[in-house]
Image (cartoon, rainbow, N blue to C red):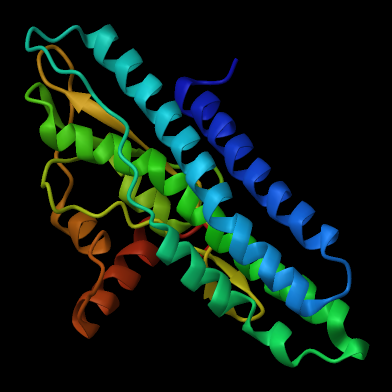
Length: 244
């Protein structure tokens, strides 16, 4: 039987996968015309992201309430969906990931279209699932009964994700970043998602361990060269068998 995090992750992946399929359908409907492909994506991608981002946020809200009800804290709190992706942000992503279509020749159109769509789909997946993480982490900050949030990594996750989820660590700082990373595409890390998920942690009878200083370093958006070297040494020493 799947654990609760596995069940929720599978549901989140279905939401993100459907968003990608909707994008693919838009591109197919435009045929072999690069301008029509881009026009269709500019018109529909913001709507697709908005709809599925809300779906991911709603999934997170359901899980948040499920966990909170199990703990049954005395302090009342009504969590809400949190979505932060704007139409302008999505349009900028479409412009960036499909720019190569502007100069595509008929002889390489299929390749350029496939590469552009792979980049766009990865970015869209990242934006869609952000609704899940934002809903968890932002409600945790507002919830008087919550002590922080946990990261749940896939069993086959990389060193980085396993380290951030190690010991069931709870991130208590309001500024702690979820630090979801992308996937390798043609030699560079672009978009995508590690598909780790977040879940709220509460006090009371629940046992929990604070995130370590190194886990907070790993969650930073920008790290110094010294911090990057220390993090790499830590990952290689403590998670030698994991990829990454």
